[in-house]
Every structure is written in structure tokens, then in C-alpha cells.
Image 1: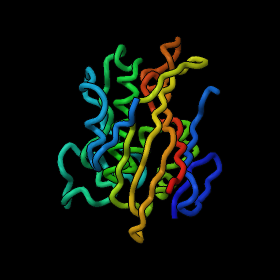
Image 2: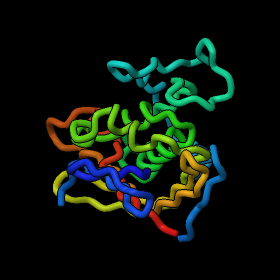
Image 3: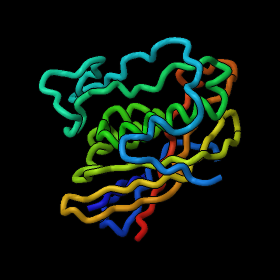
Length: 215
């Protein structure tokens, strides 16, 4: 069964689509090898400090700076390692495509490694309210050998926010070994440097994921 993201939860067959919606104001693809999402994009962005530990609440496992007890080869789900929290960038870098791609690549890497709790933590607060962590995890149930390609995208601004869109591709195998292929936009959002905005709001987050099954 494929999972569908939308404002009203749907679970449909693999011919369906994946459409996670958050809150919004209105080149050639770079294809990854599995596990290589973190190597896409430009040179390493300027980092001003280590990112805070990305620990989710409830049943989520604690993010670890070293392999947790019982860790083997990363084949399990939500092992909490490696720490895929996007780095904290300089304000100048955060405003640009560099900041958006830093989060996007971390998100792609987390999905590939089946660190879904860490991926969920990169959603906008509005998207998290619509999709709690357990429901987000359930969307990927049964998927294996996940590869996420996130080519260079486009920036735009609207009503106090900036957006970055990449036309992504996810390939995987389902629980029965059948191939799964999904394509569509992943949209990131940050609040512009307006009075009253917080540092967290001025960081990029995943706002929407709209992936349709292809054959």
C-alpha cells in the first residue's frame, strides 16, 4: 500500500499519490545513489554553530552522536543515528538557496535511511499539526531500498515568506518487492526577516510534499 499525504488523510494503492500539505501563502536533475543525498548541492554551507539535538517527543528515540546500543548497519527504522539535524547556518546563508538545500538534503537523507522521526522534525509546525509523527511514519510503512533525488530548484517569495521548490523523485521497493516510483515537488518555506519573527521561523522547513506514483 502506498501512503498519501493530503489535508485529509488518505491511504490508497500504489497508483495513488503522496501529498503532504503544510501552510502556504498562496537544469538537469541531479540523481542520487541510495544514501548519497547528503552529497548533492553546492559546497558545504557556512555553519555558525552545531544544530541542537533533534529529539522528538513521545515514543521517538533520542538522537545520538554515536551509534546507540544495539546499532548494527542502519537497517532498522528510527534508530536515532546518525544525527541528521540540519546545521545552523549564518543568517546570510539561511536566506538563500544554500539554506533551503541544507534542509532539503537532510530531509532526503533521513527518508533514505528510514529516520522518519528526524524527517518529521523538519516539517513546518503547521504540517506537524496536520500530520503527527506516528501518521507520518505510517506513510512509509513497508518501503525498502529508498532513494531520494532532489535536483536544483527555484526560489520565490510571497507575503512575508520565501519558498524553495525542488521536483523530487523517490524510488523504493514495497513489502512484496515491487518497485515504487514517486515524482513531484517538495516545497520548503521560511519566514522572511520581518519584525517579530523568531530564529526558528527564519529557518527553512519542509512545507509541502506532493509526489505522484509513476510507472
